Length: 68
Image (tube, rainbow, N blue to C red; front, side, top):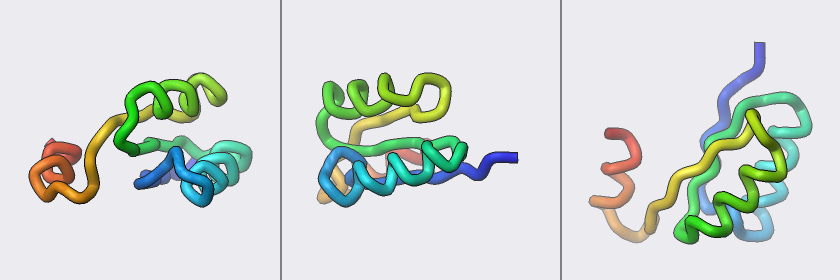
């Protein structure tokens, strides 16, 4: 059974590489970043494997909203 990874800052260089590693391993990934367009593009690279959400991780309220 695949694992679930939640990657914050998923569209940056390191975050993107981590998403790629988990997705290529067959794990499900929730990619989180500020840009909806970039998250959507990343998710389209791995249909059915990567889903995404947006949040400004510098905002406590935005981070709290991720879990609601």
